[in-house]
Image: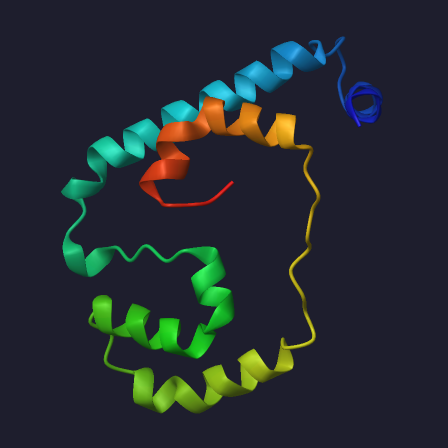
Length: 125
């Protein structure tokens, strides 16, 4: 996979792209800084302006979570939009989330790099 990405990167750059290792480290660093800043500043967001929903929970029960989102954001139109939401959710029922097999060593490496975020949101590895 590494080689394919490096090869593809050269197709979309004018200059020689950085090595995969440099690119990978930069992406991990950016992710860590972005979420560190988010965790620092999310308390500045009024409670009625932010809802955090775990993807797996939402996918398992989308209508329930839409109601939670409407309620938490104090949106009044849930009842009038419920039928539209139900139809949309039904129209998307054929879509299945991709499942990936990740090498256990890579999985552990990712966890070590992103432990704070993974633990904070209680994701399993």
